[in-house]
Length: 627
Ligand code: FUL
Image (cartoon, rainbow, N blue to C red; front, side, top):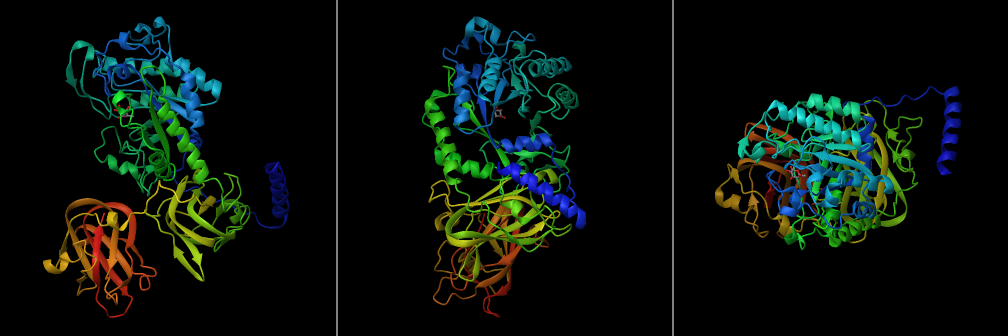
């Protein structure tokens, strides 16, 4: 009802305004942009993975391609049990291993005998893909399929004949089970296998062997709505780890053609390519147990609810999707403990993010485009309305006045990605008295994308402020929400002792005895620095994303840095600034100061004091930690 009235009103206003004011043009897209199917895919947010097959019955993670099909004998297989679990766990779909690397097909394929037709399951009449597809249809869950390009069973693997087989197999699978939302091509390939009894190691040209252009043609013909997963997409990309999280900085772009299965710099996939020209958002795959397939000895290693909740914030809340794997056991069921954890995980997220403190509030902004791109669009419930700044205005502030003073420790922001991902840097603050202070986070606030969730130390306030500092184009923010999640255990700000762990370094041009005072993990000793900067040498290139600075802790807190500039590089002569800013409130509260920046790989880091709290004073550093 609300929506109908709103759209009639909007229509009326549009007619009246267009009669008397020049119409406000919509922001231009900032390339690359997603295809509509990629937007729909990202809106799914969480979906399940199922690894099940001969491996399950042979206690293997990577079958060699020689396990006997007769061992596949799930006595109580029930795809509806799986699907009901996923529904209760808030999942929007399921991706199933129709064929894993061992080459065994869980549907009655006509193309190989190494398939379910030759198993005791339903006396060879079973079809797990078909049964799962039916259960999904019945309960309203989307289906997707994993088809391993690497096939350790097939005698002709590594020759052109296998590629023809693989394409025909894809065609068969994509024809018989209705629409799929994604097709999963795993990156593992090559190496040893059974290969029809040859038992040897075979290598392939990882970039060209499978003829991906042909594969895309097949999929465009048979499943045009499906998003294609592989290490480098093109539909969606691997996130570069199997732990279930994306970088806090996460661009939904890749440089087209650069990433392929086996890409050596795969850790970049956590962050995307900021200068990429192809929209390929990240998918975080992780198993609820240590292994992807079921192993009895992992029954006591199911991830805790806190762990899953933490991963949700670092996947969905980091502009990616969460693909959570359930190893089905040899009965053919998801074990009770796994489903209980998954359902509780979903319940916990719903509770934490249940009461949106920004719903319906009127945001105050420093830049307006006008027309329907009003600030109120950020706090309505409509995905497709958004606040926009005028063309070329890439920074602006938004104040969200709450209805009353509230405890707050979560914030959610969304950009309207159909027009591109834009925001490069932002800050979240809360009002206390007449001051604005930054909220305490444990990660950098750079990108937003489809969705960014922030967890921070609880504040009590009646106003929140987001300062958008930089973007690739005008701002297009369609949603802002804030919550009090309770005092939870999924999120721990690094404690002081955690913070004390970091890379070893030496300090260039500083006496060793003095330098040690800032790395001795003893807050009572502080290094005096004559210059306005220090250069730390990590000895080797390291992936770094934060600097932690404990100011002098002596009675009068000497040598406090007020404004800083951090630069990094691989030679002392070529340093690039990665972050500038101020250590807010350091005079009154000289606690550990943490600066997070976009992760970079570098050997040197320079901290420069561009302003001291007391002019003319030299820096004194109790501890400097680099992570
Ligand atoms: C990996 C595979 O090699 C694993 O067996 C599993 O399927 C996982 C999801 O992807 O690369």
